[in-house]
Length: 393
Image (cartoon, rainbow, N blue to C red; front, side):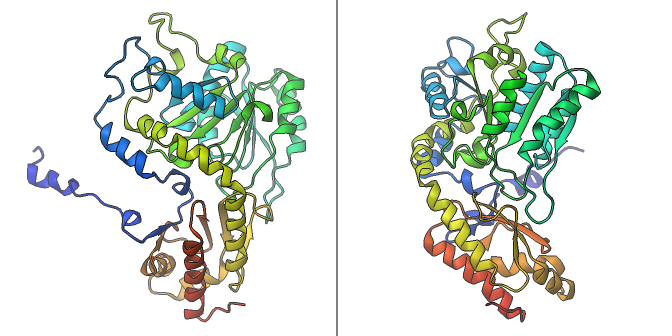
């Protein structure tokens, strides 16, 4: 019984192919989270446990002044056009915290969400004891959310439950197709109904300019490790001052601690890297039009391949790309490596990040790629297609 030092050493030399020199990583959940050098330095500096708590004199991570966490959170709120920011372990936990707090303060039993919402939105609702009413999308091939249906679905909630929704949620850009939604009409509806509006910006805040206040959000939720060049896990919960009064309630037993955050959620390296990357993020969001251009260019190049088609709203308005690839799937049916052939072919060309085993539909991201890298990706896919006798126009 027990574990020997020898057997435990197999975990001591971990590595990943995406970090090897010259490798291009297309993974949509990582492109916006790739650390700049200043953040890698912070990762090493603050990698030890509760490393931000050396000078905690007030018992709250958001009150620490050395390093300047308090100042950073204020600057981050301003950057997002919101009043208050707190950090969570992941963006999904920010969603859960808000829903739990709203249910406690307002009552109610249901929320309204778009049908492209991330699965974690549904988990947060279920964990908070709330049912979910969905706003439909247009289906294949655009899967465009019908923003005009939010009012009808909110009415359905009231008819079926006898109460208005606890909250109305819109996924700013979804993780399935990268469809970018305009929050303003949903925000206007929420103001009319007196229902809090939650904008899930996990795939947008940190990679593109966003002002939550101008968009009408009562809460803006984002992911540091997906979109803020931060190590994970870390979530960003940005609130209006009004909603903060309902969400950031103190514990009755430990009044210096915020109840639904269970005290201080993020205490070390993820927050240090988020802070270190802030200037880098503030600068890069100004290049968003160029990022959209790159996504559209790659779509056009990949659609030259027989059978390949972009899914989601056209033209692309976001860096996450979902492609229907039936021609590659047909190759996979005959290939000895089956669906893994595409992963191995791309890896042989210095490209990773496409989920191994998938060929019917694939997802990728162009965010932050250089022009040379972009061309290399396009040429790699086209070369693979030709090598399996697929036509390229």
